Image (cartoon, rainbow, N blue to C red; front, top):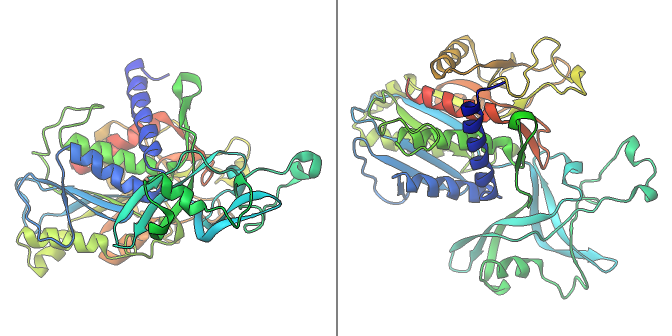
Length: 441
């Protein structure tokens, strides 16, 4: 059993993650929440269209749609100073609102939605859902919005499908259109309903990016507060760990709080939160886009880097790609490697794949173990069962784009891609501790 003070710190960290998730029902909200919290910690928000000026010891961030990059300039940084980048993503599998979203039949009002990524469809059934994202007006202005609980995907009663427990099959088009009211779909207006929560009229809206999210808050539970259940752990758990570690470097963390604004930093710490990882990362705000490369190049230039200097800095850089991985499932052990079986509460995971679905190599493995040792944190490995191929991450994409040495890590969870995932509270805090050790190395 963990010491009481460690459990208390883990509980406080998990509770703060619950707050972050509640404030981040969409990737756009997540980027703004990170920017808001870092702004309170003294980070200056930059615009990509303005000239930048960086001061030694300064803290900066820039937001591009659902992505955000933040960094601290060490007092002794030069054009050849390398970057230590913690990468994560802000999006999660789920549903996105289609054009002409107001639909319905048989007296029900329904919403037309499109599946985003690879959600566990059944996990979205019988939950009170909200709509969240961005509304765009005729003048190009954007406004973030999140409704109260508004929609639900009602499951068919077992009386009408006696074989439901023998294997539930959901059609992505037919069975995933949520209800949000009763009445005539011709006269109803779902977009107008959303607009009203942003203080706008329906006719003012010229574009939108809206997703469904579970309205229920996360909860810590289990023996010794061992577990956290909440939506969007994939990958807000990593976003939150990086955020709290960066706050610590800025001297504003209330979890560890024993730091001095990064005065001892050797490399430039960067938190890189990307959008669209769940659908391949190929966007202007995704890891396969130019965002990170553009910002690193601008930072290098402002530090006096020549083209050769910048390449030297990249060669001296590391990317820790942090995303969730699979804990061994006690009810389905045969789906996991028979030997390598990470479990909740035993530390963050090192993700390894021979086919480069993860970017970890032997050098990265050794570096990761060193950062864990420095943080006083246990680690465990993840590798897939040969007959159950794994997914991928932003790690191989970023390594390919920039040539930065990369290691793939994360925390083990259960119910991955469910509307409500399950993590170990101690793992969440440990990931944050390793992130800080990485940035201080």
